[in-house]
Every structure is written in C-alpha cells, then in structure tokens.
Length: 380
Image 1: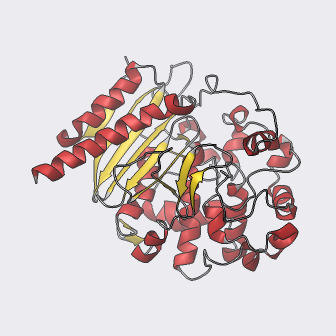
Image 2: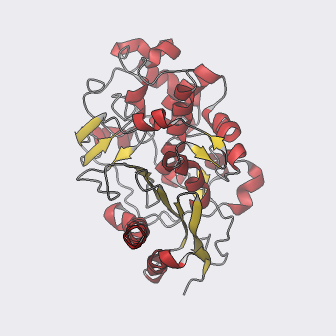
C-alpha cells in the first residue's frame, strides 16, 4: 500500500479518502492540492515517481502535466491583455503579420485561446525532428488555411495551441512564453512549474507511465484523425531530456499539484496571489465569455470554451456551478477553479490512463472537495 504524505484539514478529510482510493486502485504516484480562499487546506502526495516503484514520490516531485499546461499559457496571454500590450479581440496578424496568409486575417487572439482558430493540426505531417524546430512549425502553421471558418466552432488545438500562443507572446513581449511565465509568474509566486524545464531539476521529475494509453492513430479524414496524423506521439518522448527542455506551451509543462494550484488560484482570488497581481477582475470576467458551445470538431464531445479555459458543459461537467474555469491534461491531470466559491483543486499524476477512466482519479478528489466546501458553507 502506498504511503500518503502531507496535510489535510479535517473539514476536507473526504479528499484524502478519495486520494487514497486512487492508490488502492493502482495509481502510481500523484499529488493533489486544494486552496480554499487564501488557505491551502489540502496538500497531499504519495506513491512512486518511477514505473519500477523504487523511488518515492516526494513533496517536491514534479511531472509533465500535459494539457493542464494550457492554463499557464493562457494566463501569460491574458496578462499581456490586462496590461494593454495586446487585445484578445485583435487579429493574431496584428502582432504576427505572416499569420494572415491563406485566409487567416480574421483569426482573433481569443480564437486561438478558445480552440476556434481552425488551425488544430498540420496539413502535412511533421517529423519528430521538425516538431522540435519551433520556427519550422510556426512557418507551417502561418502558411496554412483554416480547416473551418474561424470563430464558428471549437476543434481542440491539442498541440498547435502551444507554438501559436508562444509566438503571439514573443511578438508582443520579446520573450518566449516559457521565459515570460518564469519571470512574470513562477518566480514572483515561488511556483515550481516550468515550461522548458531546466536540467537542474531533472532529478525531481517523475517518470511517466505511458503503456496503458491508446497508441493507434485513427483512420479516415476526420479532424481528429488529421490532428493525430499531423505529428508523432508525444507519449514516446515524455521521459526524454529533450522533451523536458523543450518549450511546448500546450503540453509539456512540468510541475505538481501545489505549483499548478498556486498559479491558477489567481482566477479565484481576484487575480492576486500572495500579494502579486497577475490579472484584474475585469480580465477574469472575460474568461467566462463563451466562444464555443457544442460538439468539438476534434474531440467529438460536447464542450464549452470561454477565453483561455474550459467551461462546464454536458460533455465535461466539471464543477458545481457555471462560474468554474478548468482544463485537464492527457492521461488524468486536472485543475478546476471554482471562482464563485474561491476554491481551486488540482490533481497531478504519472500513470496515464485513457478517457473517463483516466479522469476518474482527478474527478474523485475534485468532487470530494466541492462536497466538503458545500458542507462548510451550509454549517456556517
């Protein structure tokens, strides 16, 4: 049986119970955190950081959280919007003129943030070596025509959102998105999260178990199949030094539940964390502006996107109210911010599982936290 470490306030004991259940059912290594108001009421970790189960998951273990990274990337763009250095309502081509090619002059920054830009994958598949060449990828994406009319529907930009948002930040600010995140968010907040992970922390990075996820590429010409064919599977790269060093703002951020929660909790705290303002309340409100609500063309699930984050929907019923912002990472990580009740819940792990099975682990702790917080509100 895996040992659980950390602390859990008595009022949130159900979160620890559900966290333990995940290990009883075979989870490898994981961390979970709940921030309620300005207080960290749950900070737990346990299991192992390696597939062979010889090294314990420590307090400072970090792991690739896959697309939960997208929340961090969105915050970088929203901070620039907040400062008046860009507008989410402006065309991407205002800041990156080459992007206007092939009918993309009307693609707005908020379209990229909400997966409605129509640039969900590569027309011509790229190789692993090309994927690591960001300039090559940017030239390819800038030259493509959109796959559907931008702004009319979402089609999950699983990988391409990373270089697209990264280039918007670089054109406006001069820094890469990874460096902007480090200097403007991670370092001021003391958050142990990295987009472009330095070698100095490699000894704390958990090995990711990938053998339980589907590896086959769908046939046909659906949008999802085109995305899958567009580049090699990142799962085959995740445990390599090259992948860890790479800046992929859509999918290779490395952190743990504590660092993710500290950053995204700004959304539930009026934009301020430990005295550092990341966003104004007005910009947080913009995140709730619905950009797409319907069947996602790539995921083929009912989804609802605001500006930068997922919103609860029939297909993704995260949260207990409409004032919730969230996203999840491939294999099971997730961060849910209940803005109305000022609560942030994050789960990060290193055993990747598919679909609802993978998401069940995070959902357990998230809804246990919601239940605990609701009980406290009823008792007060």
